[in-house]
Image 1 (cartoon, rainbow, N blue to C red):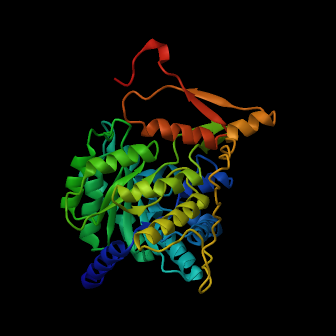
Image 2 (image 1 turned 180 degrees about the horizontal axis):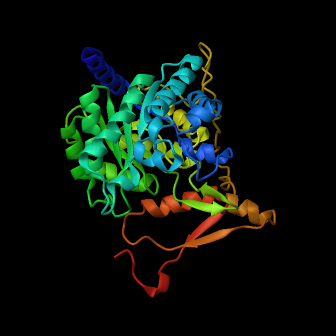
Image 3 (image 1 turned 45 degrees about the horizontal axis):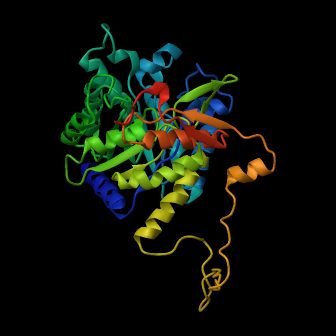
Length: 397
């Protein structure tokens, strides 16, 4: 068993060395969008709605995901107890892994199954914190179920308590030697809820023997990028992962709506890779459409790395000249005026134009201002204007 699992870790590292891996999007977002009640147990659906869970896995694979995560994020004893399911931990996790494997088998693609493990919830917070033995036992029975179901790797995600995360990793390592991806969540101040900094987290997780360390969830791609940058690279051979939320959700007509669409996530892929991300994906609010946009962007990025032209999927015929139009300019002819902008065209056509004013950045770092402008564009704004001195205060000094 040990030899097999060690081989799995080596194979995982070799796979990441060859090319970045794209994980799937948010399971919960899709389940809620398809009528699953907000306060129900999503983990129980592997038994009550296996068709729905399997369909979501297949959609992610069809969109281009290299790995799918099991529907087991909250399938631990403490979080299942309110639903009367505390005695079903092993069964639920085993079935979750089996459903993901079945979807992989149907697809015929070489997709990995990541056993999703989330925080234990109230068990590790407040004065009634569970004992260390109970905490480790909760992780152990969940991991045992995922291993029985055939998970290829384990992914600990959305943790904001480093001590809790390390306890889970210790149990995983005691049970076997599968690849482990460990991700924490940080606020806009780049500090986790327990006060842990990204650098401290990365160092501790590297020492614990994980195969990849990174960030997920949070308030969007930019904060995750900042956190990933602060993590550094504490150990040679340690991969980095980034799976942000699609921004912060807003409640619209009883549904949570996320502002960052597929195009935005596609554009973000280049930055994820530049930051050292070898495992990329999305968390809350991301869908198969987000995965497809990231798959296309990742393909273009890899093609550029290999020095090949991937601007179009249709190759040129042998001996054919590239499609291009070259306009000759006569020395005596007047230069043609530039084409009208989208705003000019809208005004000429008499269309109603939406303009949104945003405050200038508080420093010379303008990434978040640009992100805000892109989100507004996706929401339907035609243009944004930045006030030169809001409230007559200097903000970029």
